[in-house]
Length: 146
Image 1 (cartoon, rainbow, N blue to C red):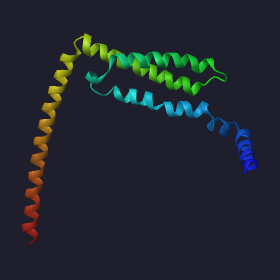
Image 2 (cartoon, rainbow, N blue to C red):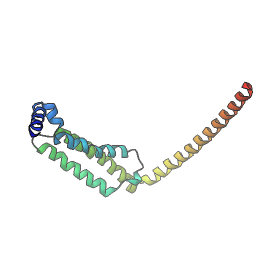
Image 3 (cartoon, one colour):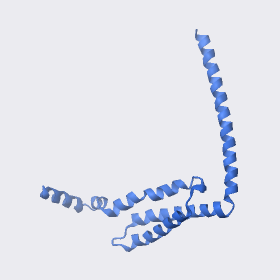
């Protein structure tokens, strides 16, 4: 059994692509990409939920590990890309936090929320009107068929 495992490992390590795909240089950054993905998606959410201290910590973390990704041998460009995306997303979140809490963003977002609620109310009334017209048309069609 040990000989079979050694043979399989030798086969994997002989091919540079499979060797890379089976290494921590690939799977570490690949699994870590959830953090920048979440940060990029969070840029579309309300800035009231942004945590300033956590955003600052993630910015420093990403800056540190961008440097680390280029300091190791061999250089891990995938890890660098992961932390580069996260660093920039966290800077964006930091700006949004600062703008919301310290530059009057609360007032602008209150207006946006009020307009959104008004539009949602209009959309609901249009939907209700459409439902009632469809129900009337169905009743009319049933009368015609009968």
